[in-house]
Amino acid sequence: MAFAKDPTGESGLLLPVRVQPCEPPGLLATRVYVDLVGVDEVGARRKLLAAVDRGRPRPVTAPWPGQGDAVDGRGRFPGLGPRVSNLPARNGNFCGRDTALEQLYGVLRTVSVAAVLPVGAVHGLGGVGKTQLAVEFAHRYRSDFDVVWWIPAEQPSAVVAALAGLARRLGVPDVADQTDLAMGVLELLRGRDRWLLVYDNAESPAELAGLLPSGGGGQVLVTSRWAAWAALASPLPLDVLARQESVEFLRRRAGSAVAVRRDTADGEVAWSELAELVGDLPLALEEVVAYLEETGESLADYLELLRSRARELFGLDHPGDGGGEVDERDRRRVATVWSVSLDRVSVEAPAAGALLNLLAFLAPEVPRMLPAEQPQVLPEPLRTAVRDRLAYNRLVAAVGRYSLATASGGELRLHRLVQAVIHARLGPAGERAWAATAVEVIRVAFPDDSWEVARWPECERLLPHLLAVTAHAQSLGVAGEEAGWLLDRASTYLRERGQYRQAKPLAEQAVTVTETALGADHAEVAWRRDELGRVLEDLGDLAGARDQYEQALRISEAAHGPDHPQVRAIRFRMDRLPPPRHQPSTRPPPEDDT
Image 1 (tube, rainbow, N blue to C red):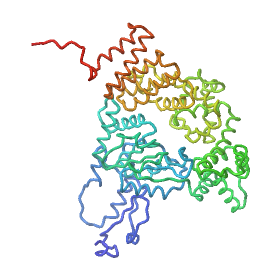
Image 2 (cartoon, one colour):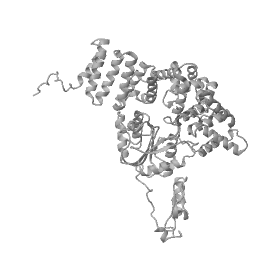
Image 3 (cartoon, rainbow, N blue to C red):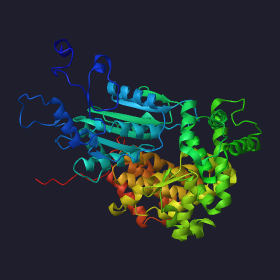
Image 4 (cartoon, rainbow, N blue to C red):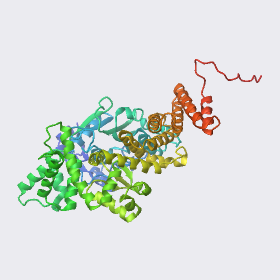
């Protein structure tokens, strides 16, 4: 109607205003628009008022569009981004993926939950760029949201902790029970819009049961290595980069630091061959550039090095020639690329190689000073290096120069893909030795009194690493007694915080691991069964709790006698339970107060 009444635009009945990067479609392409992209609030106000100022009467004041939608009820200039956010820093080297970002934006405009999943590259390990895509999406479209919250989702307990942190930022009344706090913020979000929750690296839909918002006007973005999300979220499969995107990334990132042939065509062919050798995998491409920048090798020499290493490791003339499954060829590409860098670091700084071995058995994001907090349990030369702050910083710098790990925000980050390559390089004996070392590091660091409220922040900090080291210990059959102790303390911590469902599998594993290591009748097993009984009691499984208490009581009485404090404590908890339904109560009837 506006076009019909004002076909030339002379009357200004229709005024297009561009607020995000786009090309005006259809008839809008014929009109001059007011461009507010990248303009600050003062400049945007000035440009918009100048465009509409045609001498017509107007109100003296008016609310900013969208007033009332923000978290605190006040209007907010879109270019400022979300008022509440813990979003990771934007990757300045992000390249390509425009189509995937547009698809993701379109999906979240029509559904409330989307999942970014890997296809065609190193299945089950990652490296395809899911997390970086989610970070770029959240930054690129930040003006759409008043709240953006990043949630590490590999473990349900970490999800609960992250949601509790958001609850505090949004003013939900604080309570000791983190689960109640997390449920409180999910309930709050159901009544609001303009929010984005990013669940990064979720294991499976079952792990997030009850931890996703069930309504509201916001969006949920999940990244995961697993494919079974179709019933819960609209899937967006993410493949490796297109070849041209890979070449552009390599050329732009490497720049003049890498020597290539003077002939442009030959240089283009060399970059393309390199991209093919690493399977266009974004994480491997970043590793390639880091190596070339640090060593100053020519592109031709590096290509030959990759080929020779592939022959050495796999008997292949080309890392992609395996004749097997696609994912096996991908793994060979990955192993080739990282083996070159890992070998160089180990030669230049042996302690840096040892640091990477330790990080490979912890969770991917490690507090920077954690390896230096317990030097006495580390092997040489790492033990000596971490005791000297300057020497330790040099180790961190050494691994960072080759992009094997990154250090930022007080954390060391080692990608799961790199962890997997390190495991494979260590061999069975090396894996068991470093897994046992990692268990000992966390065993010394984790609070013994994990039930104490004052120790909860430290427990929360170390819990992801406890879960990582105990998983490795169980799969490799090492450090059974220490792993059982850690699982028991983790269960105690989660139970005291009200996370009974998350505590249960840890308490069960603690029983199994400790029994395997020490025998079914060892006194430590009584403690483990007592903890499992307490978890089951809190979950309402009174029959299961009684069974665990009875077994714990039997073991403890045999080990300590009937009057030991542990025996009395277990008996007290048993007596507190109601009697089994099939047995009459043996307790005396209450006195008649009448």
